[in-house]
Each structure stands twice: as C-alpha cells, then as structure tokens.
Image (cartoon, rainbow, N blue to C red; front, side):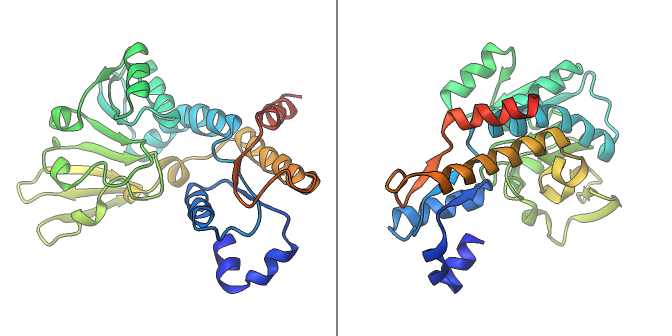
Amino acid sequence: MTHWIYKKYPHLFKKVKGIVEESITGIHRLHHLSKAGKLCVPAINVNDSVTKQKFDNLYCCRESILDSLKKTADIMFGGKQVVVCGYGEVGKGCSAALKAMGSVVYVTEIDPICALQACMDGFRLTKLGDVVRQVDMVITCTGNKNVVVREHMDLMKNGCVVCNMGRSNTEIDVSSLRTPELVWQHVRAQVDHIIWPDGRRIVLLAEGRVLNLSSSTVPIYVLSITATTQALALIELFNAPEGRYKQDVYLLPKKLGVHSGCIQHT
C-alpha cells in the first residue's frame, strides 16, 4: 500500500503521520526509499520486534511445521533424516520440533553465531551438498533466494520431501523444475510429485510457497500478538511529539514489544 500511494498519490503523505510495516518485502522497500531520501514519513518495522520474532517466527513455526507436514505429506517423523536450511528464529523452531519427534536433524547456516547456536543445541552442522543425497526432507528457512536449486534436486533420493518455511516462494528454485523432461503429477492440494526420466521423484509441497501459510493455520494467540504490536506502534507514531521520529525506518521500541506480550497474557 505504501508503494502504491507513493507512486500514484504522493500528495496523501501530507496527511500521514507514519507507517507501520510487518511484511519483509514491505520493509525492504521502505529501507530502499529511506536510503534514496524518498521516504516521506517515519516508519516502524514491526517484523523485527521481539514479540513478532519469538511468537510468530519461533514458537508458531515450531508447532505449525509438524501440522503442515502431517496434513500434506502424512509423514512419520521418527528416524527421518531432515536438513533444515537456516538457523534463524524459524529454523530454530522447525529444528526443535523435528528433533523432539525423533528425526535426525542436520542444519546448514552461513552466519557464524547462528551456526554456533545450532551446534550448541545439538544439531549436526553441514553443507546442503554433502547430505542432499541421503536426507528424507529438505526444509528451507533462510529468507534468501535459490537456496535449493536444480543441481540439488537432481541429486535427491526417491521420495524426498521438499518444502519452504522461509520467505515468499523464492527459496526453492521451482521454475527450474518446469522443463520438458520432468513430469509434474498433482497428487492433492499442496502436494506435487516431480518425476525424473529414470522414475525417481521428489515430493514438492505448496509449490515452494511458505508451507504453514498454505497448509496449516496460525494460532489466534499469535495473530493477536502481532495485531497488538501493530496497534501499539500506530499509537506510538500518532502520539509521538514533533521531531522524535525523522523520515526513516525505526525498530519498535522494546518496551512496546514487551507490552504487547503482557497484554495478551492478561
């Protein structure tokens, strides 16, 4: 909406006191506008607030990953070898849930601190290329693009499940699978088999889109926390004295993030 108003009706910003943004894409756009000196009003980044990161990214994904995989692929988790790409908040939640169900969990991570956390939490750090031939599931949680590419999928074992819990639909290079030599077999909602000429197949869930948003539900408790966080951010911008916030992107003050969690618990 911000991008649309900026392009079509820039005069409306004269009546706007500030912007509250939760989507990753929206925040990237706000940062680009800010760096270019084109952001007309202050903006608060709610996505990176403490409560959003913990409750939506960590705790919600810790529960919804299991529900999503059960609903789509009807997987039994015990003994399965799984590689989780990325050990941010989403990766932490997914890894913990799968480990608790008896899966053997490998983690790939490029950030040294997150990699150390994965090691200290008891996960096996690896490179995707080193385990992609043997794992039963590949789950992307990086927020990056082309994490799993055609070269990886060409090496996967028969029946390997591939899904995305990260950002949008960019983490798995699905477009590389739409080639004449591969056959797409739609099994049921959110489940496709991609069949190679030798008969080997992988199971692609939700066509690479965010799995829990496509196949599961987000608990009302989590939605209420994010909605409360946004409401508090709006109140902060509206009541802020002149000059407190410049035409830039700000993180939500920590005390407001804590307040949103306290409001929900009461």
